Each structure stands twice: as structure tokens, then as C-alpha cells.
Picture 1: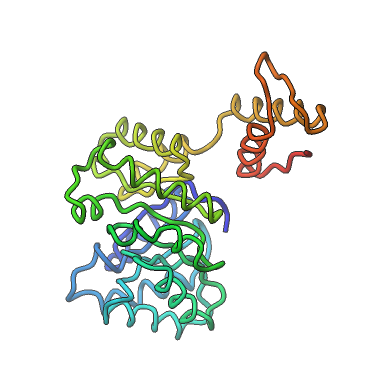
Picture 2: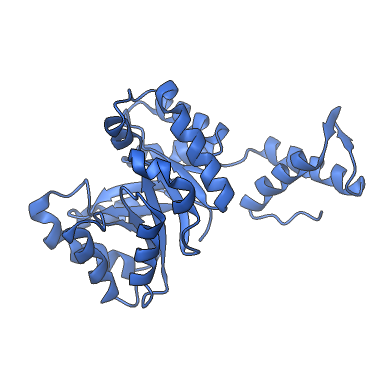
Length: 277
């Protein structure tokens, strides 16, 4: 799967807006069968979600199913078993154990084109996020579900209150080598706040951010796309380190050691470059 800077959620019960979401510029469009669809509408919305994963063109596709610990969630994943041509990402909500991810992996054995992602949005999920992140080679990224987590842990929805959770998830994602998306900004009409939250998440090691409105996508993509200056600096640092033959180097008055060079290499690789080292 290509690197994911932005993921846009859309209700599975509104297939008429899927084309607009796919044209939003989001790296991933996620049709939501969980929070965005009421209990009485889930059965009627499910076929649209499955068909969405079977289609192609535009952004990468994803579906958030209901919890596998529920009857509805099992019905969701069984519907995907009956659609072997499906592609895209299946997002597991409220993931609380590595076993849950492995269970989803087993259930999708006959649907090799579907990848996995997991929402961490409970205290139990945060406790086992390291196991969840590394539970399956099919898992591409984690998503921070801050709103549900704050309710579960009696936290305020503020940077300081959520700092531990963000740091722990960043640690887990980087240990497992998977992506990590921040929670959608609930103040989605305030684009300055969307940008502030995205910039904070990037500084903390997140690789992207989810959104609930198309207007947020361009802001998120800009924040998580390296600027021309960042790319030029990374190229210069990697070249200087390469010339030092693995020793200590200097670049524009800055000391360059191996950890810094590795970070610059990762930045270039996410931009599609393969620097010589």
C-alpha cells in the first residue's frame, strides 16, 4: 500500500457521495459501517460498502466494519468473504488485542487483496497496541481514536491529556513498521485548527491524519508532504553522510551522524526516492 497521508471517512449509507469523496484528493477513502450508520440501517448499507471495495479508480479504498466482537461485525466480514475480488483496507474498530487482528487475518484468508488497519480507541487497545501493531503482515496502519479513548479513560479532548496515548501509539507503530493516522479534527470547519493538529501529529511521528470532511484533506496532505526545502536538506544530508563512508559528517554547519541520516533516508523513501547510502 502507498503511504497514507489522509483518510476521509464517509457514511456507507450514502453511496451517492462516494464519487465526491474519491475526488477529494484523499489518499484513502473509508466507507464507514460503524459510527456513521445507525443500527437499523447497517444491513442495507453493507452491500454498498462491499461493492465499494470491489470497485477501482481514484483513491485507495477502505471500509470500517463494526467490531468483530459483535454479531454485526461478523456479518460485515462474512460479506467480504463472499466477495473474493475485493481490494483495499478493512479497518477494525475498537481493536483491543493482537488475537483480534489475527482472527480478522484468518477470516480474510480467501480474500488476499484486502489489507488491515486497526483503530485504537479504548484503554485496553492502548495497553496492547504494540501487539496489535505487529499481529499481522496484512496490517498497514493504526488509527488513533481519541474521542472514544477520552470517553473510556475520562480524559479531556486536549493535547496535554492525549499526549501519553499519542506517544505510545507512535512508539508501537514505529516498532512494527506500520503507518499511524491521527484522529479526525472534530472542529472540521476550522482549517487553522486542522492544520495545527496535523502539524503536531507529524512532529510526534504520525504519518497522516483522518478527516470527516473533504475540505480538511488538502490541509492534511500539505502538512504531511515534505516541502521542497525539507527534501533538499534530506538529499544534502544523505549525500554528505554517504561521502563520509559511514562516519561523522558535516552539512551546512550541522553535525550528521547515522541516526540523522537514517531519518532523512526514510523521509526521501516516503516521497518515492531511493537514495544511495
